[in-house]
Image (cartoon, rainbow, N blue to C red):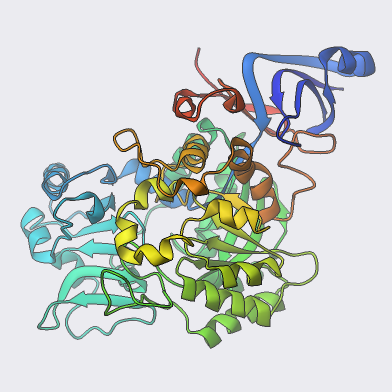
Length: 531
């Protein structure tokens, strides 16, 4: 007994393949075709009919890289990502401090000095003036840097005598005194002082994030959080309570940070294991930082700061040792690598320790991949996780960082695909807004937003089919499920994203007016737009 779905269907089996009906039984697609054909074949087995009208059914969109609990925090904290000046940032912070009792921490997310005319990065003394009685921690949009005032630094025991941790930088003034800016691994020095979230608070931010993702048309996501919020067991227990012990449906693949990989195995779990709607995925490793804070690791120095070429989170031999450890656990790896030298280190580590047969590694971000690295990656069982929305956030300032000569290999999504590399699409939320529709629009147009319609490196625009495939078959490839999900075809999971518009039939500028009409997981409607 099963369900007949009726509507305009983009199967994504190829660019022009459409259908008008789908028959689903036990959560698996049995047939696609015309309504007449399916009724003729399955008439006695159809017990439910769902007609989506003029809306368009796609395979379910999956965000291939995000941080769900951090996204939930961002949705509940002061959001500075849309602030356009240092004066506006100061005003927003003053408002939040005014609302906060003395002694309580003030948190904010998403500041980006590249959006300011003066490119101002606040000094701790300025933050002290804004929040004289509250510890303050402000997370940069890239999440590879934080700003802290003096009370926050003191609470964490950070002063001029504190050494830079491996893979991190405590930015200091000419006298060696911390300015309040902590880069990459140095930002985690604050963890010992920040109040721990309660179980109820963790559940709440998890619920907020998942419900928001589902409303954006996401049927699933690949998240990395297990090294935060109290460690592996506490974070995994949160997901268990919110997903597997409620009626909420969302296909969650959990990347496992190398720092908690032993904890996962001590708890009796292993990579690839599925517990309800949760699956354990690859070992997550950071190779470098990000372009915004000039901590992405480059082969050559930064164009606008020739004194640095970035930060290596792990030295090459250490990175290889972590990959080797993953192989001992029969695990693929997912390596964060933004700069070309970081990607070189990551590729070399994978070449030294290839994944076991049948497993596929992933290189996360791929924002600067020269031709020699593309050729090497093509020889590997590996995919590249890209974030199309980074084009809207990073241009034009990233051209100052890299210089014109490197831009031809930067954010070069079309080149990656044309060179035969498999790419998956994600948001890296909370760094970007977790909307596949916005990601698809960015991949197709490469414009930065409503006010700036400049298309940056338009030769790298993707077709509509290629852009949607990032969030469907691309995300399926990332976890080795390309034979089970990512298409609307017999034998595939009945996960659908239903939009109010057919993206193949409209101009790209109209994508932003499309809405999610329905989100379907395992043949269950988990979200439906209010009429």
